[in-house]
Amino acid sequence: MYLSELSVAERKNFLEIAYFAMGLNGSYKEQEKAIFESFTHECGMPSYQLKKQEQIDDVIRLLTRSEVKNRRILLVELFGIVLADNEFCAVETEFMLKLAAAFGIEEFELKRLQRWVEAMNDLVHEGFGLIMKD
Image 1 (cartoon, rainbow, N blue to C red):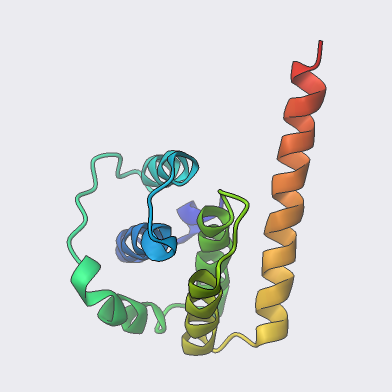
Image 2 (cartoon, rainbow, N blue to C red):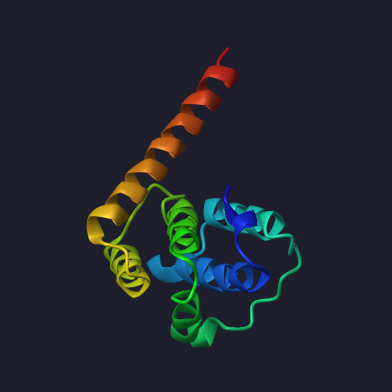
């Protein structure tokens, strides 16, 4: 939704973190794969090849230099993928808290971002329900 605001380098690093986050719960679910594919298109990199999965801490360190607005965008978009399966496991929670701390984002603000994404997801589901009902 907001990925176009990021620089090309930030988009590449975001895709690395997004893919890494997908696997935190031990599997790569279809909902997450679909969202990741939409991320690659939104970033203008539909054939992006992952290169930094083994250096994810380095990727995070690079992204800490981004503007505060861009760090918030990264968190919002990451919530989109970790919440895609309607499960927010302890490992995903811990990862998002680690990212927020690295990005200088307070925990209360992280929770606000999470609630907003959850509300948007609910509205999208509701919209599909209204459109698809017989």
